[in-house]
Length: 149
Image (cartoon, rainbow, N blue to C red):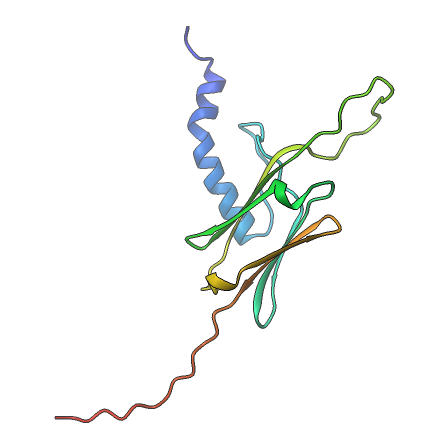
């Protein structure tokens, strides 16, 4: 049986849309509306800023444990993934509004400058995950006498 045209279009545009999403979120600070596919991962609210010594990424991850979050840094991209478990269903609960996201999430943040890979830190407290990427300090250049032969 042939795939419906809509599914074929989604399959073809999926990787392209991910690249455009990555570009928009890292260069403009927000994403563009997704028209072609349902999001498989939600994106937690994120702040990215720098101090004199660090790049800092803060994610709002309420109701999670530190061990439910995976953080990797490779080729200049910080990737934070995890799964927020849904509240178990209850017969006595009837939602009037449901805005809290559950399930898998992922954030990718491009870091354009060199960071000290040995000194990366992460701290989870009060529902916020803070990742610090220390900047590589510029080494002082010392004058070197070069003899001409």
